Image (tube, rainbow, N blue to C red; front, top):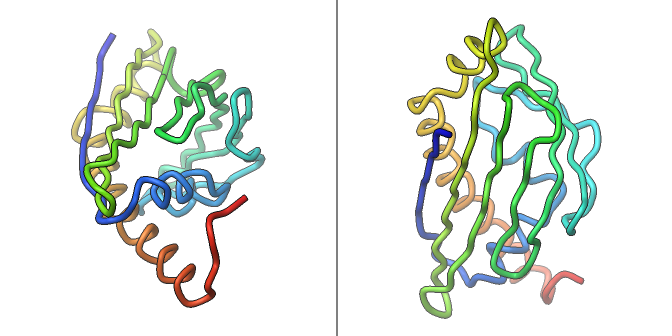
Length: 161
């Protein structure tokens, strides 16, 4: 099965990076144009929680359902249970590199269907497209975590419940 890995750092504590990823709005925040996401259901991140959404690639909608597992302070895994690929498992791992720096590792194992559906997923989820998506997510994560930290500092908010 094909694999894709991406790694980057965020100038923020691991707790802030994890909190950003626990936010149920994160999928919309991390989806770069020209892809548009419509979230149908996104349960709070926990083992067994589900996310249902449609990714729009221009006029083409791809319905997706994922279940979360291995949820903890250092990351989680989402596994496609219904969607455009034969299989998709995405591990998100957070590693503290110091008190204010965190490494984010994304590792995806996936496979394509045969026939027309497989041709479509091979086009949309080819390595260049995944590299674009995760390079954009790198920038969007850094921006989103910085915003979260600024809001906490301005509002005097502590850690989320």
